[in-house]
Length: 77
Image 1 (cartoon, rainbow, N blue to C red):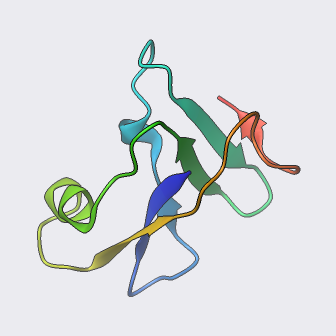
Image 2 (image 1 turned 90 degrees about the vertical axis):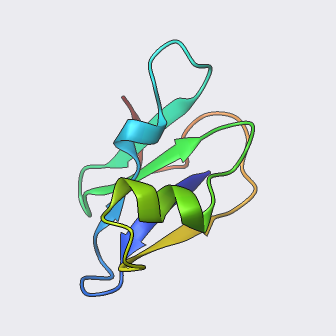
C-alpha cells in the first residue's frame, strides 16, 4: 500500500492516479483525514512521486506491506 505525502503539508497523502481502474489495484481513502492510498502488487518509488508531483522532491513516497481489503476506517473507491 503506497502513497506520496507532501513535505510542506505532511497531512496531505495522495495516491488516486496510481490506482488505474481495471489494473487490479485497490484505491483506499479515509474520509475523516482525507488520506489516500493504493494497494498494488509493485510499490511506487520516489521517482514515481517526483514525476507525478513536479519533480522537485517535495513529495515523499510512503509504502508499507499490506494485502487484502482497505484498512479499517478507509473506504474502497
